[in-house]
Image (cartoon, rainbow, N blue to C red; front, side):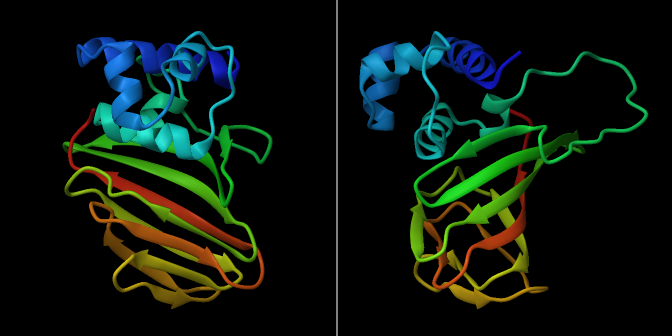
Length: 187
């Protein structure tokens, strides 16, 4: 199923589970009601910023909105190549969901991350106890809590509290990194 249809179905199902109206969800996320209606109908491509806002309002990890829940059963191996996986672009950041794992009361999502050169994005706080972990592969990345970001280069790693406003900035060149998001409970 194509991404816009999956996202639409997941948005509608999650909003309904949370017993939120279309109007209230759109208001809380800072988007138009018509935009949310189009997204839920699978007729509009979402931006990364819009989906982050909706995931925050709905209290779910971003990955829950991006992929259909897998059928129960054992998987011998999961391979996601560059052309596969749910990919989203924003003005500054592009992410591609590589995998989601739920174990021991935690959800973990693994993303391929690209931050565009000369750009800066401030991400609003996720829900409490969300941990972000980044491993930089190329470029220079300024990231971490907005109040105290760190500068990382290739091979550098950071872990920080995603429950506070945080920044992604690529001062010079594009940055390629792996982002791992850990959520305290399956949602």
